[in-house]
Structure formats: structure tokens, C-alpha cells
Image (cartoon, rainbow, N blue to C red; front, side):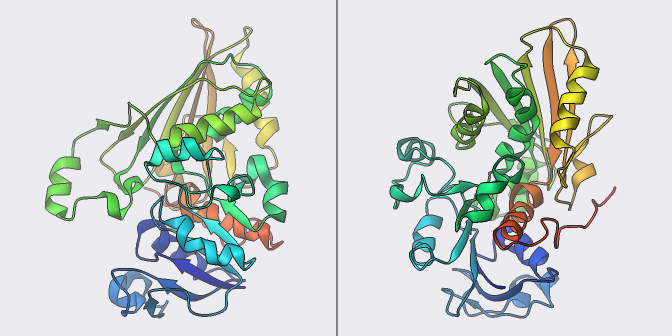
Length: 341
């Protein structure tokens, strides 16, 4: 299949290029980049030296699928011509994730250019929406924090073992902000990020309505009450999400683990671990590791999950969705194990 990538020079776009350059069924035929237009990929990203394509202002050749890695708010505008022409589209930004246009506009402070498409988009999490992804032409790739958090909580909500009072404490490496969200002065960035942990988005983070929407859809009463606190930590990649919720009835850890293992038994990229996972355990892979346990004294479920925010949290998930949309084996091009240490 012929692939076009919008905004190849961002972190998600370059990671997508790295993955697709080794995909046996995909051929990257066009890439765009606003600031790098007129140059070739190896000039801008020498580590992708063997993907020797020109970076253009727009996709100017025929394609079968388009990925957009533009910032949220700009992505939908760039994708509209392809959507109208019935070309399959995967949006790595947030523009089609939240089905309520008012909530999207509140979260991202921008008016949505195509609210009529929000109900048509499929949330691109195969562990929940696999069937819908296979038949759609418009996929909204999940955010990195929501990916880790929803996968941590889905089995518990579906099995109805927790009450509706969820706390999510999540940490991300600095690449989670995207290249556009970082200081242009790398020395200043290092000085501010090194040996420093920051909580942010306490008055409302763009990923909270996305998390709430998907968890509510899984619940019996279509309601999710979520407190979400993200943090930036001084590492390059990785998301670690620790989720808490009261149990409706007393349970043993073994019973909870059985629920999680049953739910994820057939999933190729989500693994229930016997020990708490670490972000290094998922570095460079499309895996999400999930560790459920209980606090016996407070009768509270505690779930730790982790993933690479640029792979399962962005580009790898996008490739997984593409595979499903084109009837390929879901794991195609994503079999690489994690890097360690």
C-alpha cells in the first residue's frame, strides 16, 4: 500500500517513518513538513538515511492511506481533502478522538473544522474497538496517556468490580510534549528538565475528556468519574500510569489477576506482568505492560501500566490500526522487542 505522512519531522512523524520503512506491505511515497519543505529526509533526520524522499509542502502523489502527525487543531484541516476523497486516514493528533465538539473545543481551545465527522471516526484502540477499526476509513489514534490509562482500567470496568471514583497518576518522558512543545534552546531545556519532575494540567488536560469518554463507554451506566494528574519526568521516552479505584466487593489479588489475564489473553501487544513493569521494559516496542494488584487495607484496586509514548502511544499504534484497516496481520512490522537497558 502507498503511504503518505503529514508532518514527518515531528517526533511521532519520524517514529512512524522509522517503523513503516521496515514494514513489508507499506511503501512511503510522500512526506510533508512545513519548516523542512524542499529538503530531503536524510538532510533533516540523518538517522533515517535510507528513506531518501523529498519533504514537500503537501502530499502530491496518489496514496492509499494518510497519517497526520500535525499538532491537534491543525490535523483535521489537513486531512479533510483525503477524507472527502474516501482515502483511509489515521489521525495521530487529537482532532477526532473526542466525539463531543464542545468538549474538544474546551480541551484544545480551537474550534473544530468538521464536527460532523466526529461521530464517524473510530477510536483507534484495537483492544476495545477492533471490529470497528477494520471497517472504517477514519481512525482517531489514541493519546499516549489515555492509551496507558484505558488499557490499565478496561478489564476492571468491563467486569464491574470497581466503583466510579477513579484516580490516574501518570508520568511521561519529555518527548510526550512533542517537538513543538519543547524549548528551541536545547541547553535551556536540559537545565529545566534534568533532575526535575513537574505536575501539570491540573486545571484540565486535553487527554482527560478522552479518557473519561472511553471509560464511560465501557461502564454499565455510561458514566466515568476520573481525576487525572499528569507529570513530566526527566527521561526521553515512556509513559507510566498508576490507576486507583475502590473495589465494589472484597477480592483477592489472584481473582483480579485472573480477570486481567482473561481479558488480554489473545491480545498481541498487551501483557499482564507478574512484577510491576518499568518504562525501560517497553522502550522501542509496541507493547503495553499491565500489572494489577489490590491494597487489602483500603480494598482498592491499583493498576500500573507502561508503554513507549512514541510507539504504542503514537506511531506504533497507528501502524497497528493501519494493519487492521487493510486486512493485514495485526502485528506486521511491529514485532521488534523492547530495548534494554
